Length: 105
Image (cartoon, rainbow, N blue to C red; front, side, top):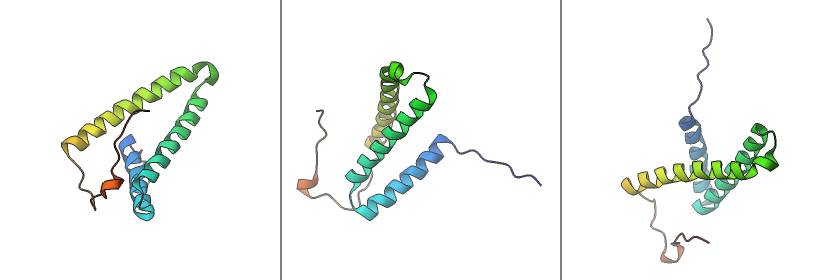
């Protein structure tokens, strides 16, 4: 009997990263720290992906930045809309001094 390999979808892989992030957020009790680490890890892996796929990364760097930025913005926008429509229920309400407003630099 042969074994059939089941390929994971992008969403299934993403769910595995999110599960790890949730675990680390509970362990560290710092969702901001974990979010920052995930963004750094994503940037690092995407730079590696660009380097592997490119024949001249120096020449293609701006195109890669534009492409990855547009992809991230579209994905973030979709997920923000989802959380607006379906707000998550936080385990605890943050203290007043812990609330941050997101502002562009």
